[in-house]
Length: 290
Ligand code: PAF
View 1 (cartoon, rainbow, N blue to C red):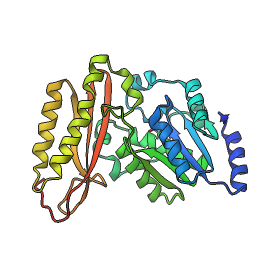
View 2: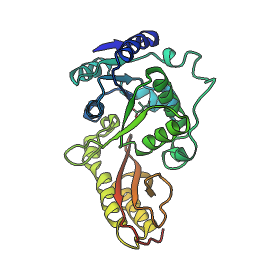
View 3: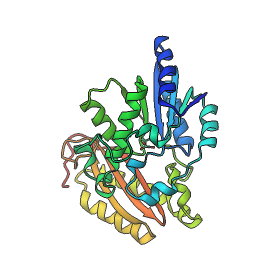
View 4: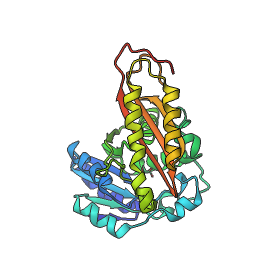
């Protein structure tokens, strides 16, 4: 595995691979690599990538809270080992100045619209602008055939797909199922902020989503009551819930006739903000009462 901090050097390596006709995949990450990230690399290979570029960049413009950015775990040496072990060809770990040469008072940015307005967009102002801006920079730089994202960040994946479609970028965006601990907790770098007692409680969020998905798939499901019920139960357990909502697969409020749906939640447990989701299917023809 070669490690690059410099944009020009990465470009030179990419030119050589492209000249040899090799299929290139990009796996963008913020580092603190865990099994969830490593499955993205496996998925890149499964989709025929001959060269896998993983980026590790804690992107300052997508953090809505300075304390979150300051304490985000930075573990580049261990990350490099783990990525190398999983067969990554190039690790791109740029300094902030390489990604933002004119500083953080940006001269241009990518502003996702409809897909970014609700849910995370409501609670993390500016997050999707920063995320989309850095993802488009990385896609421009690497010009991969495909780019791989985890489905845990369901809305992030939807935003990336929407931006790539809108900007006519010639890249295939691939989503990879969430990797979970044995008790159901979705793997996340922020799980390490949980105390042992909170860690025991944390899987209850995914349990609630699974239960809600089952309830929501019933004919005539009363969506709003189900949402409110799960918010109350999670709050009684000690979560501080930001949202717990049913959406269709495109993240619009579900309408009769939308078969593919998802229930998504964000909740604080102590100092950790957890997000998770559970997609599900409603049989065609079932009515619902929103
Ligand atoms: O999901 C993440 O880790 C980040 O949002 C991403 C896609 C690497 C952009 O910084």
